Image 1 (cartoon, rainbow, N blue to C red):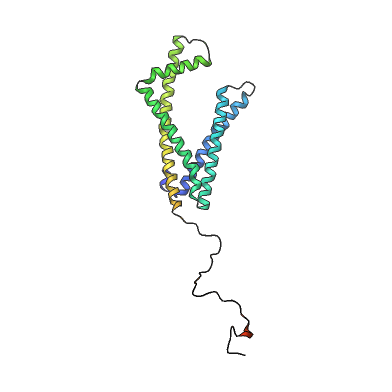
Image 2 (cartoon, rainbow, N blue to C red):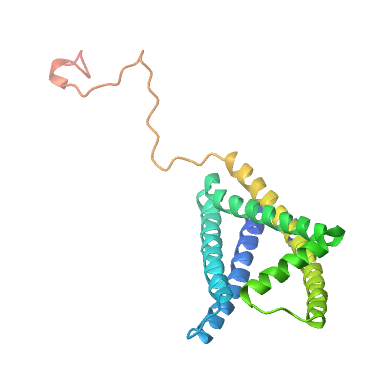
Length: 208
């Protein structure tokens, strides 16, 4: 983000898009490896994470391809996939940060109880008070880390969206040159000359 102060606008937008794609590809590869290791009896969370990151990776790859093509062909509408992706991630990360704020501003008990009920649904059997207290501490630590992460990610995606929007406006103001040869100017007062027969006095009427 700091390098965007020195780089051209199109280069900064492209690098951020490719950087996002590499990060998502890294997580997708790790989830894929974990799924292959437990392919005989995979857990539902691993399967869900695999499909989630696979879909996420496809979206990132498509957005990056169209971002590169937008600069190459000077077409602003090619940036729409990247704009939609950045806007969606910004909204999701902002909602996650608000939920974490609610957690630390009085909603901790109710949210923890909801997590415990969800845990009992998938793993029947009541937890003893010691395990429950230990889990509450872990939930608070995870919530704090997730809150910081969602805040930083919201700022990052907001910055990427504004930068891509600026590049989109820049390309909208650019009119690409036509690739075909332009037709000659036409004036109705001077119709085009047609090839005439010299023997009939078309070119040199005084010469016989």
